[in-house]
Image (cartoon, rainbow, N blue to C red; front, side, top):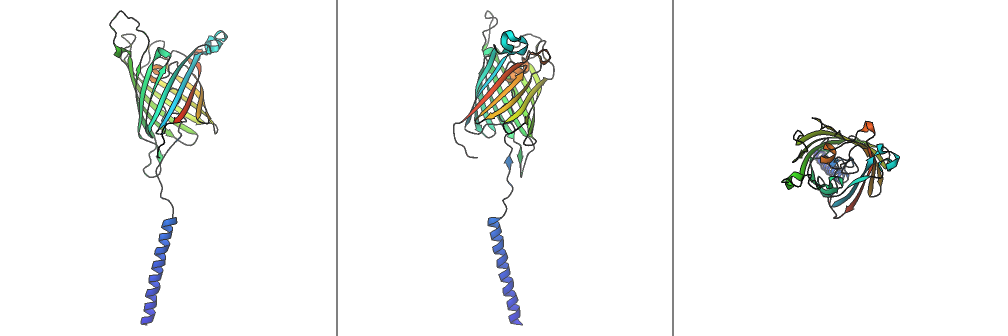
Length: 294
């Protein structure tokens, strides 16, 4: 009887050790725990067309950007449908962290210099602790470089300056479709008329629809809430993104001339219904300045 009990106990101990050994082996070979992953490639550029996108540059990356806009199509064949005229913005954007970037650029429109900082405290992600959208903020300043309209009066450098602040709330719904909302406040230190507001508030919407592996349809539109002075209109741009290696080439049409938020939100003079739209292209080329660890 004692031998039988001892045999049972010995078998139990051996089974327990075998079970532990199997658990250890499964622990080594077992399934990986779910990891939090941030959503990438919502847009192929840090800009939709005119407006900032929810996308960020990788740390240590510089993006050399050329934004080019021709004259209006309604000028006809004498000006080659606007191609004889052009305005442009050349800029350099820098990735600092995965959720922080900054940039500076100069436009021929008003000879304007602009600089911005973009930061995302919340990023769309999947897995444990996931978040459904990206929330980012953009703060920027611009400086008008044109000669003073009236040099005989007392002019101040601060009168050349304007500022804008944007909040971006965006979501990549799937591999093909991204949508974002962009409320923006633009403040001008100096306005043209006393009746013109110094602060203008607009609500922007931008999106991307992937057409195939290398092409996507993009658009952005901003609606000014309290209306604009006579002769100015809400900006609408529609484009096609084409990926070519390290480049992102974008062909688009827009009724806006300016290529920063102060310019295209507050000083768009073209009307789509009258053919006062401009063909243009944006070219983005990224360079890795410093290696980074994911």
